[in-house]
Length: 384
Image 1 (spheres, helix red, strand yellow):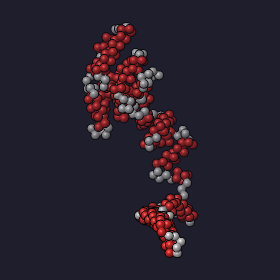
Image 2 (image 1 turned 90 degrees about the vertical axis):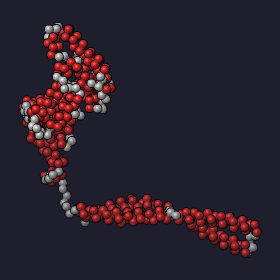
Image 3 (image 1 turned 180 degrees about the vertical axis):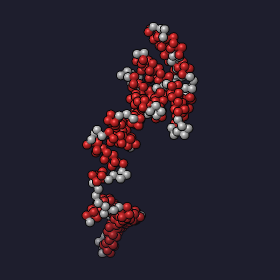
């Protein structure tokens, strides 16, 4: 009974709030000129009596009669204009009726159809004890248990992928980390941890994620998830030939109906379209990297000569980038090369030029910024 009393009270309160402006509009719609019409008519009759009784004569009577008639016409016009607003007042009355009767009736019908006032209260403890299919309750229940026993590795192991699927990526990474610490590494835990780190970095394969993936491959050498992400890391680092070879190796080792093959083939097609199809030596020459002959020759050089050779190859790559600024792999390679040579200012300038060709909002621009972060460079072309 108390429930229905509360419902009636709340309904009345809401109806009052909605009716108030409608009632004000109706009150304001009354036309004051309707009273003036009666007054002016009485004045005309009074003038007739005064003229008949000799209290007013000639021009004075005509002037007074004309003035009262003018005012009577003006008031009559105002009343007629207000009469044209009757439909609006009728709409106002219909709106009031809808608020008082129709809206409460609709609400009541909906509740009687979908609600159930006889259902007992369900406190949080009861919902946690019997969560059913409510994922949020399941998560809350697991979190409650982990607060009481933070070293429950099985709890972290169960909760981590649920966090990931629910979009709580930071919590997922922390849960995978705890599960790895307590229960030890497995391909599933390492792969889930790596994917969480990748999601947190906006799709970039960070060094920490790569380390987790390599550990996964050490346990399960044929883990396609780890192989895929490591191949993608090579692509993001601008190592197109190595990435192409890694993706092609995944295709060779996978069943013909493997669900990940379409995505792998997309990357292979992309790398080939960007010119990664030549051999590693040919690609290295095109990007200013040393070939096998260059490496062999460098073994006989002293440190100064080797540095001079490397600097010459980097300068050659810089010239190529002037002619072809859309060579993304070239920018990745030259920024890294300048940093390895200790030429941070040149690396920062190369980063600035690379970002002008590949804006930071795009995927390739984000990869340039990720590389810059690893090398201690800033997005505006400076050095941290």
